[in-house]
Amino acid sequence: MEMLVSTDWLAKELGANDLRVVDATYLALDPSRDTHAEYEAGHIPGAVYLDLANLKDDQTDLPGMLPSAEKFASRMQSLGLGDGSRVVLYDNSPHRTAARAWFMFRMFGVNSVAILDGGLAKWTAEGRPLEAGKVTLRHRHFTVWRDGSMVRDIDQMKANLASRAEQVVDARSAARFTGEEADPRGLASGHIPGARNLPYSDLLNTDGTFRSKDELRAAFAAAGVDLAKPLVTTCGSGVTAAVVTFAAALLGREDLALYDGSWSEWGLRPDTEKEIGAACSTTTPTA
Image (cartoon, rainbow, N blue to C red; front, side, top):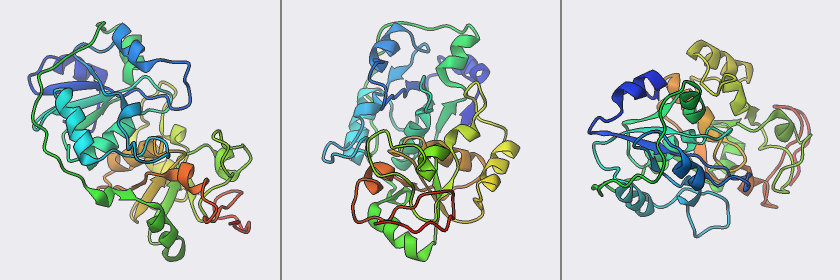
């Protein structure tokens, strides 16, 4: 199974014994929508609801941090997602939250996992079937496993300020990156010193599908990112950073890394340097 699958492919594969379809819609900054109710009102036939908003570390005040391996495994078992399953993720979110779910699945050892290109919007625009209600599948064994090398914490990000061993790629909008636009959570403005800015929206077509591989390579190059060198992605809270990570994976990168705390942590802390202006500006960082 490819990492990115089309609606045509999924329509033909629906009903396969080993295939599991998962709704990974998540709307962190839009409480007006009830994604669980939307799922029950209409989802791709056979899809289960991931509830990504609550699949997180409850021991921190930072939003949406990665859960423990045990919590993730428990959720997978309850949804009928076990060892040997082929998983296809989709969303109905402007932030393409299926990519966050994809990153999570990969980190917890699921290699046969894909994203539905264009998500639910493309599926419905093509007049494909939906079903209502809640899907319940038989519990299956899921092996508890976690690849910590895919995640960066704040101490590692601080150390990288000096070493610059990894390129930092920020997926937020240009206005938030430069500090021209205030942070929606009321945090400090700007970005991690030395970071490059590649808004996740630059990687998508207007219909929410991913751009061609040639266009993706051009987008990374235009942002000053060398795909041959180590990189770590970041954003506001680790969600859209996963879109950039997924795009890099589509281009063959295997050593994936994401700063989970992202600006929700970096912008909150008084002991972190912040930079304003365009990437690689000469603006003096502020503590």
